[in-house]
Image 1: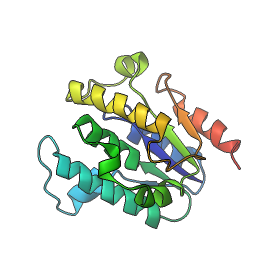
Image 2: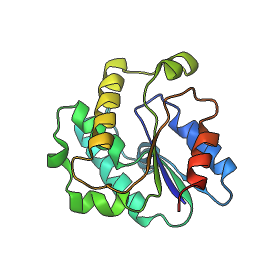
Image 3: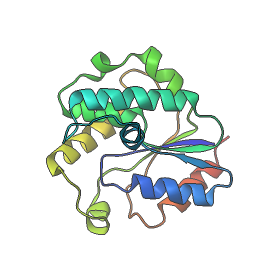
Image 4: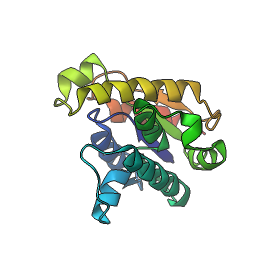
Length: 178
């Protein structure tokens, strides 16, 4: 099974990815593009720039297309579309459906971690709270509306509850998928 985990910064994505890999036999984590690019020497602005998000989007598209087997992705292209939208970019101007659809269609499940009262209470305070809120709103809109019609049949699970028990909820949903 191929699972993508999306959400703005500070919602517990990386923790969930590692918990899922521990619960799902044979699954491997694919680190988020930011970390992979930083390991390769990419020099990010602080905070990241629009160009930095574009590079992460391209990396995410490539990772989804090239990773084989049972994997759990820490971030998906949807995340970077949301960051770009929060910076005033129009999704339709950032990427084409032809580029997005093959990557997203390779997923069996998209898990979205919105900012909720539970995440605010249970997780450490995140940096850049205004950006975080804008990305969260953009992400939820993009996921729900699929403006490029790039993932019409992809099951989406929004986990709005507390961080505890998320992995088990994903495993239950994944078990019911074909």
